[in-house]
Amino acid sequence: MQNGILVINKEKNMTSRDVVNIACKKLKTRHIGHTGTLDPIATGVLVLGVNEGCKVIDLLTSASKVYQAEVLVGVETDTLDITGHVLKEYNIENLTNEQVKKALGKFQGKYLQEVPKYSAVHVDGKRLYEYARNQEEVILPKREVEIFQIELLDSVIKKDDFYTFSIRVHVSKGTYIRSLIRDIGKELGYPCTMKNLIREKQGNFSLEDAISLEDIKPDQIMKIETALTEYEKIIVEDDMLKKVENGAILKINTTSQYVLLLNKEKELLAIYERYVKDPSKMKPYKVFRRNSSEEVK
Image (cartoon, rainbow, N blue to C red; front, side, top):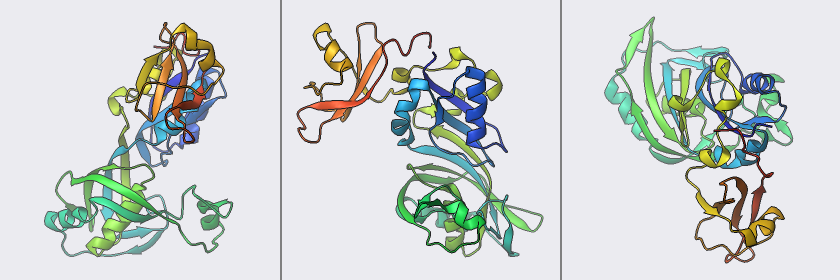
């Protein structure tokens, strides 16, 4: 059984679930999960957990992301992107690079973002898109997100009576780029909608690491410990081996919140996290099957 992490370059007009289904067929397994939904309009980095790799999805989804987005100015849609129904259109006489840069600068740092109506966020037991499709009223939740960096990539251009521009943004977990573009429009004084989106990076994974769906093969699966490069790794001696395999709470000489424990053959045994009841100790976060990473790179 192949276990680990797979980095896919998602194509346009596919859902993240479509990608998972194709990967399941190619790898002959039902146990694959993705680490952050990409809208059908979007392309780029989609990280998959394969079999035992699904156990670390929470760690991978916590990573920040980098996107390149094309913005259409003067158009408002119900989905906040060009796939939705047009609600309003405005003819704009003039829009300059300076105006856009000034608006973008307002979003550097943390801010409270309202999630899109068409999203999978749960409210009172239902996903928001269910309320939207049924035309039911619902209060959209707001979340604090952080924009680490935002920049105008090229000059504002006008084509077919509408202005467009492209941005690159480095954002925290949970940031909706569609919502960010809507909010940029409010700052500009004109509605804005997302025309195109590319996820260039998620955590340590970039487009250079990603493969196409056609290229999915077992030997493309990355070891879990290789994927989690930012976490401390500790080799477990024989006297601790059984304790780790049995999920015992341990004293480990580290100041890290999470550590990866490996045997002498450098196979991943478990991920341990700081024990809240006794911060001098650590407890199992995830325990892996022996030899779970065999035959993967």
